Every structure is written in structure tokens, then in C-alpha cells.
Image 1: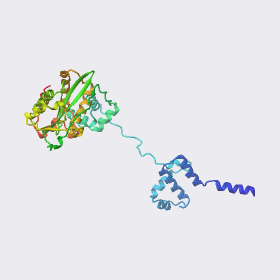
Image 2 (image 1 turned 45 degrees about the vertical axis):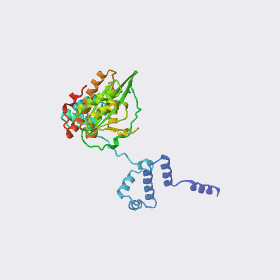
Image 3 (image 1 turned 60 degrees about the horizontal axis):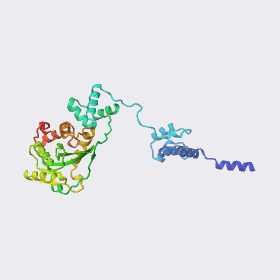
Image 4 (image 1 turned 180 degrees about the vertical axis):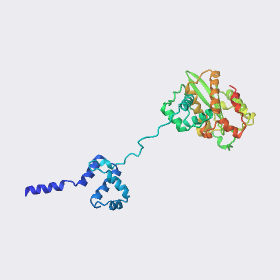
Length: 343
């Protein structure tokens, strides 16, 4: 009698095969999808009476789906119920063309800071051949043509004091209607230099020049060059409240009867085009070792880069046209602009 009672208690503590499946699934950490498929198998062998039709109807799935997983199911390996990777076993490889690869590598090394979309436009323009941005990206990846940003050799004075005025200007989509100006302050080995920058709000045609002084005299000289650059077809001027844009500079605008608009205090978004150009000038020109304390040498290098920026570099905001090409659509700005930069 004692032995029979012991056997009865043991039978009560033993799990059924299906309960063991659930316990094993939990210990293996099966996904929710796999555990749900396990319940299909349990129902099929218990309440479903081994009927695929009843099981599929009960769980709201197709018979073919159930048959597929039932064929894969192995009670000794519950991981067979996990979703398999749908990635193809063999992937299409890039069909490399040596001549194309060589051209892309040359362009990437010439313009290491440009992305695949810009390089695509330049490639098609230079080689008169269609190429996809995907092909260019694959070449960059295969040949590891990535470049890390170089450390800045100077510090930039970020203190700017500006005031509200530009919100009063009703912009017109026309080249020369509104010109933004700003100044970049450079520090290197105790030397301070100033780069005055300007950009057209519509066409993004840009100009810049270094000076040794931060006074309004050099800023006036810069604007005279800028005014000549745009064939004296400038309608409005926008600056921040820097001291260089007062006195002689402001008087020069009054003599030309040009409205002078100002930015609001601590509001860089009033001059986004120029702020973005300044960043591009730093990342694609200054940070690549082009700084020189001599304005004559620096401005010669800067002029070469400005030609590249305005006549070669595609701009995403201009549907990948160059600023000069875009400007020609709204105003007859000469394509010989690069020879008139007054370097």
C-alpha cells in the first residue's frame, strides 16, 4: 500500500509531454512567434484530434501555413519553430569596371568631403557618362575612401551681437535681390585674421576675402568688390550687428541707396544661408590646411576654392546645379565670373 501511494504521488508531479515542451521553450527563450507555433502543435495533438483543418481554423491561419511548420517541427529541437532568415543565400556582386572605378577614385580623392550625389553629378559632367550614386558608394566602400575630419588649426570667436531688422524684408526669388554678409574670425599662433563672407540668398553664389583688420574700412572694400562681382545689381544687403558693418560700410550703402537689413540678437536662423556657407568654407577649405597668415597668399588659395564652390560643386538645395548655372536661369550673370573675383 505504501509503495502504491508513492507511485501515485510521483505520477502527479510528472509533467505531460506537452507541458514539458512549454517548459523547454521557456528555458530556451524562444520568440513569441515560435511559442505561438508550438501551441499549434500542442492543439493539433490534443483538442484538434490531429486534424490540420480544425487546428488552422481555430488559430485563424491557413492550412498550408500549418502544414509547413508541422513538417519542420522536431520535438527534440524546438528551435525548428523559429523564423528563418529570409536573406538570399547568394547576393549579387558589384560588377566592377576598372575605368569607372579609377575615375571615381580620382574624383573622391580630389573632393574627399563631397558625398556620392555630388560626385555623381561631377562624374557625369566631366566624363559624359551616366553613373549611379549606388556605384559610387560601392567604390567608396570597397576602396575605403573615407576621410576623417581634420582638426581645426584655429579657434573661432563665436560671440556675435546682432539685432532685429531682416524680418521686415519681403524676399523675392531673384539673383542679387538679397545678399547676406558675415565675418569669420580666425586665430592661429597668436595671429588674428578676419574672413568676410557673402552669399546670394537665391542662387547661393558666394564670395569671401581675408583682411587683417576688423574695421569698417576693410568691410567697405569687400562690399565694393562684391558689388562689382554682381555687376552692380544688388538690391538689398543683410548683416549682423558687427562693428565692421557700421560707419564707412553703412555710409557706402547709403551712398548707393541700398537698404541695410540687420539680424535679431542671438538668432543665427536669421542668416541661415551665410551660416551654412561659413561652415562649408571651414570644413572644405580651412580645415584642410589652407590657412595662411599672409592675406595675399590666403586670398589666392581662397579664390581657387571659390571658383570650385561656385562653378564646379553641385548644390543639393539647387537640385544639384552649381550656383553659377542656377544664377543664369534668373539673371545673365557671366560664366566668366571666376576671372572677376579681384583676388
